[in-house]
Length: 178
Image 1 (spheres, rainbow, N blue to C red):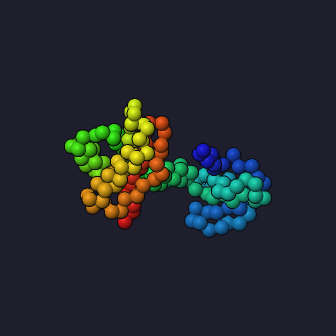
Image 2 (cartoon, helix red, strand yellow):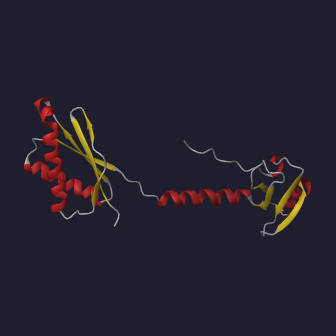
């Protein structure tokens, strides 16, 4: 659930008799009447913006250009989002009776996913009678997958909890941070 963005009250939206004012340069002008603070902002051709919560006895306000301030905040948020790295989960699906070449091709592709920084979900699908030997055959397949990663030199690989649901068995692999 997202936090509700707190909207800053500006100019005539501020409801208080007295306010503590901070000037454009950052100096504290002390506690003055709201009318006087609005006049100070108007003379400077700027806005009077409430900075702290409304439940305090004497609200803290600052004389500033609200439009520029809002623009700077949005730009900073966008810059922060740009720096975030999104980790995707790629999935490899295979059956226990997979051919050697098909297995090697899928594992090579899976290693490329891992090296690109993605998580890799390996899902084994069991059909018909294979479901009865799911535990034994699944352990063998995942042991083979683990060995393939080790043989390829991926020693810093980790895995999340297995998910066994019906005829499927999944395991998620990812590279640990170095």
